[in-house]
Image (cartoon, rainbow, N blue to C red; front, side, top):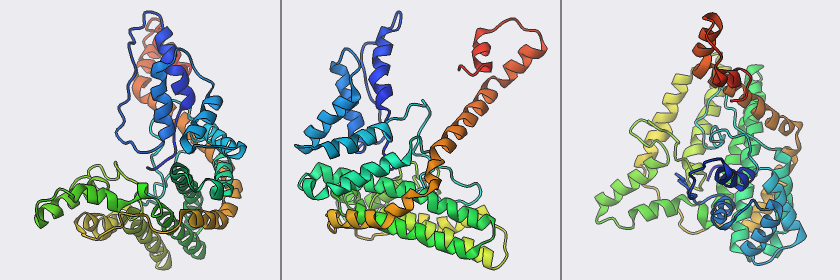
Length: 381
């Protein structure tokens, strides 16, 4: 529950290409997800491949999926899902996890700055958000539609948080303390609003996670132990954060009491060093965040709601009205291009690390032709 993500085109073509490969030993399909309960359209599309003999028309499949999911449809909701199909569910660069560096649940950092992956035009996501919000009243009786609109709202705010964070980083770079404070408040306010909208749907509640862990406790000490592990697994996952945030979740309660406080410390720390002309110290900031937020959180015993709070319809409409103007910034036109360029650089660096010595040796020692290196040198790897 961090990112709307999918690669429907690759899923649609890959298995059939594999079956058709000369001397293919492929006998079936399978999935090994570490985390589920998100991006349900991807799982449904993939599992249907078991029964198919050829790729499908994804647009047609999406239209049928929406009808089956909501029990009804119209041309507007169908269009919204086509926008999602062409954006968040259309990753095709064959690169690794795109959840890395999502601003809300990432440990705050100023140097190095965070660079979230955005492999699509954000406006496509925001247009889908527009359409779904305009159709809220007609589809509000569908629990699955309400889940989807909360999820789309969550992801829309997450992408917007990139702008607020980036604005803060640039303001710090030019020494504008007032702009840092303004953009910091924007970011903190967005996180608070994200917690509110997530709290209106039962699928995004920290309370349910903790309750599931403690339901079988035999006594109070057992309850504490189980609650500690439930909290620690989705935050530090280890005594000192050995794989910190590996299982992070954008859930109500977790944002309010874990991610938001981390970002509050970050904003206040940044303002303090600017006000007192100090040097940014990443280690100092990390220690503050660990001691004040991350370590204590695993031991806290706060009770969290296990039932939704608030009206999703009213909350989504309010947040859409509040934040949609900021999403129209030219800033968002650069995100997809920046991600693509960063990935090209990452691939070049990976090739150099893996094959650099072989390439150098082949050039200097007059080694015979190696077709593998030919493809690597010419970017066909």
